[in-house]
Length: 223
Image (cartoon, rainbow, N blue to C red):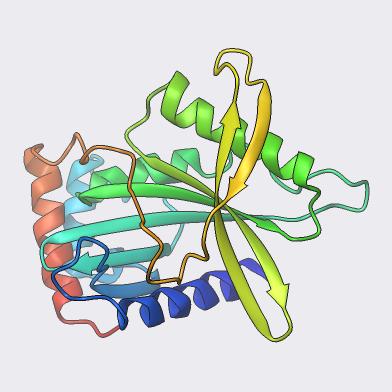
């Protein structure tokens, strides 16, 4: 599957998961939007131009996933990895970090970066890239974004998105021990934990303006 189809399939999985979870659960995501561009809102676009000195920021045209549960609004940047003909990965471990950081300016409560690895990628390649990115983002730079590496497994006509938990001996040397495959991301019994704290820019006046316009715009949209 191409990246756009992968994101759409994942969004549908998460919508189905939501239907099996109580509204008052901390696992409930609220509305799930995919491939959405808040800059299409005149108010959001106006505030973005003001924030960036008269020029709209150079972000990708669409945000891959947005979750809106009342005033708790979260965003996810997704990058898909596959094998090239020379058996190397199609992207680097740091892919998408810049775009995920840029999303903080929208005033999302939390922002995450998800790397999705095709099932044809060897476990060793997958583990090395996933653990490197996790250590880099969470432990070394302590960036205010969450990170998850997922395996995409095609099972018949179904697609399984399986979050992982890379384990390393030492985050300075990034010596890999193994990786633990968790439950499918759409399994309602899977406990989904965001490892990062709230967006540190939420109290910036201009970011608050963008956030207010974003929420108003999302309230008028259907999934």
